[in-house]
Image (cartoon, rainbow, N blue to C red; front, side, top):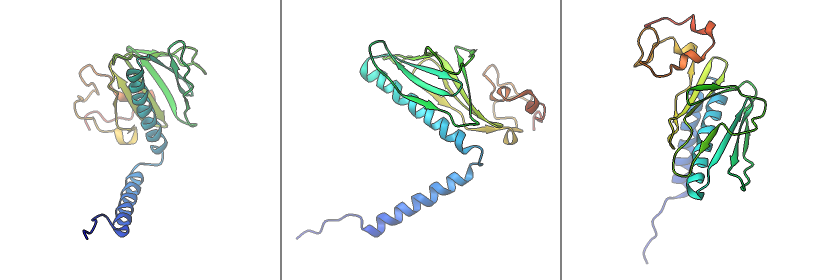
Amino acid sequence: MRRIRGFTLLETMLVLLLLGVTSGLVMLSFPADEKPLAQQGERLSHWLNALAERAEREGVRYGVAFDDGGWRSVAEAGRESREQYALPDGVALRLSVEGQTVALAAEAALPQVWLYPGGETTAFSVELSQGKCLWRLQAPGYFVFETTDIRCDDAENETPAGHDAAGSDGGHDDLRHRLSGADQQHRRPGA
């Protein structure tokens, strides 16, 4: 009789324990004010990717209506979509469409961003901020959503790689200019 080889219960439990300890250490590495921002940023990124895949799979364009309290999906005429997400207190949202900042209302009537079945999107960027921390997602016009690491004013006193001492990155949007003007005055150029 051949013996069936597999993992024992002890081995499986050990792997789960190691995964739990590792994920706990990763979560402890985030400052307390970054955790909700990181969670909301990941949630938005995953949700947009899933909606873009659904648009491609179903051959239907989906709109995203952003408002000052969150976002919701809007399906093409004749289809129902009720996905709606609210941001927690203290997390603010800022939207730019094709390089222009969009004033967000309490509830958006029409979508500002469209995801098309052919793989295209409206060119847009979304910024989530909490306190002095900022997270950003950009879509250049196709199903690629580029995200940035969370940047906080306290940790941002250094000039990021690719930026000159004045804070310019050679024409690309500088994440730091989105923070309040008072916070920017405390930066050390070239530090």
